[in-house]
Structures are given as C-alpha cells and as structure tokens.
Length: 59
Image 1 (cartoon, rainbow, N blue to C red):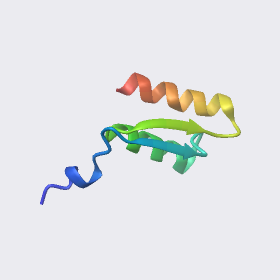
Image 2 (tube, rainbow, N blue to C red):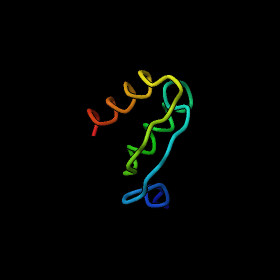
Image 3 (tube, helix red, strand yellow):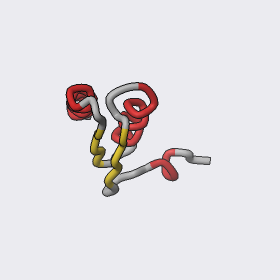
Image 4 (cartoon, rainbow, N blue to C red):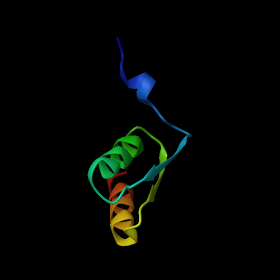
C-alpha cells in the first residue's frame, strides 16, 4: 500500500498553535513536508518565527 497519498496536504492550510518548540514544531515541519501551507503560532513569537523560517528554507 502507498502510504504517501493519505498524508498529502497539497493545497491545504494548517495552523499549528504552540509551534515554537516540541511537538508543535515537529507537527509544523511534518505538515509542511507533506505540502501544507503552514502557519506557526505561539506566545513565543521569536520561536514561532524561527520555526517558520526553517520551514521556508527546507522547502
């Protein structure tokens, strides 16, 4: 079975709250890796920006 298709998120937008660290950062990276436009939100604005910047560089 091809497991890639069920996880594709092309054309979708994902909002990840708590994206500055931990599970939130990993979730943001996973969603972006599978094609989602990923919005990173956190009370730690600098951390969320750093994660978002890393997603842009990796794409």
